[in-house]
Length: 230
Image (cartoon, rainbow, N blue to C red; front, top):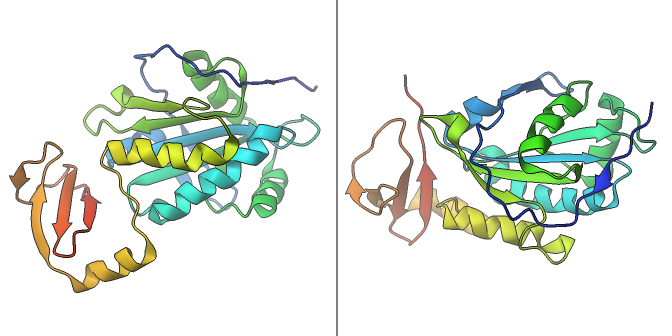
């Protein structure tokens, strides 16, 4: 049975201090992810809920791919997850649809397409959405209490055109001490010296496990470091 999901074009102005819903999902190639684990590990998490028939979803997916690539494809503290709800005919999407979707847009960030995706979408939509897609949410992690992580962005706040999405999200990530490095800077880090380590308040410190730290190098580049230790 087909269902209709309305496009969501209006910014959501209210802030919801809600418990971030947890989820555990497995990609079509068998890799399992958990929302709270990603947040506990210090990762900013971007969730993209969309459908193949949705025009804005097709426009924003490549922008999220840009974010994924600019932040080291998950290695620099930013994770992106794609939840494909429906296929081109508004039926429940499956793995064959996801493969086609990823191929059409050259997507490499993790994606999910199964019967539970709609349930996960419903949990987030009732808290942060307006019943439409795409619903794109970005959370800044609370490593101690992942359910209390901060909702930092809801699509399409601060956005006048689809091709601004990567720029807007990158700006918010930078404001929260998540920095993308270009290829030359990433390569140079292996050839420079560590000058100092500072905490998120800018205070110089030594290495600490389970703490978000900023490593400042002699060439002026900065790396955000979080190492989880039991």
